[in-house]
Length: 387
Ligand code: SOE
Picture (spheres, rainbow, N blue to C red):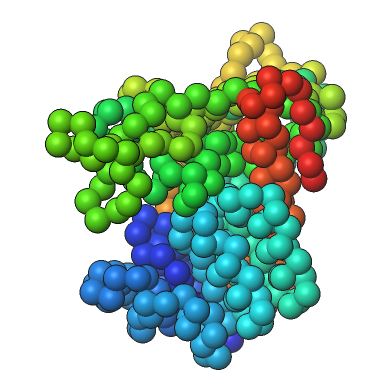
């Protein structure tokens, strides 16, 4: 039986729930995992709410101050599933205490913070990984293998969208994701980070960018118990939206490929539409998260008189990574499995002392692209990411 590692998770809402499930499932389905996680401590500021979440998700202890959690000698791995403004302070303190770190995306709210996090992890010699979970969808891994094997030839085009619609109602309140001081940016960091990371993994580094951002609804009702009101409109305190509602950008890759990226929270009917298409000299492929067990492929080397895209059900354990851990071929998996895959690689990385991708360096490079989009949107010029 593998050794264990005590995990301390900061954050217990959406991502806290997803990560908790990953820790609970990993050793059950991947018995070869090199370190078995113990759900040691769950941390959140609201004592009652965090206790309830700990009971629901299976954590033994609770903590209301992340400073105490990162200082706890019993904890070996700190998981940061909080809004972006606390990633850097928690990660830097965790590294100083010798803890390995698993951090939600985007790595930080600014490039400077990302650099400080890398320096802290490096000088402490701890493992650091960013949770870009879509990397570990088996269909995305198949896309990666086809590209690496040269089956698509020279890559010409990357075309990606990540579309949502959950804030279209102007009465939707000013939650933390709409405030720059907490979230860093809007769609850019939340959704753009995912498709930039996928583009980097599949097509390579981005060299130049031109982009625009837009905030369609500039003021929203302030949530009770929060600050930042601008004054009352019809009795309702309103506050300023300080992040982008949508971002669009064009990019050139070091390889010579060109790419388009579009992210928005205003695509009515698109609740979580994450999709990319890649066109190369010898083939094309398309991924759509809503059909995440499939990859559409068109490969010149297998065209017959019946030409055209075909849809591959990516579920064969003998060729598709992670699949063997789950079910026989054809018995499909879902969104939450991507977190288990990521945590499996994280724990093996910690056991071996190697940071798995996406490393903090990957997180920094993604951040540099997001930063370039914002600079380009401001200057209306082509700009280069500051890696
Ligand atoms: C909300 O927009 C969100 O949960 C993102 O924060 C996640 O990263 C994405 O996977 C789904 O949408």
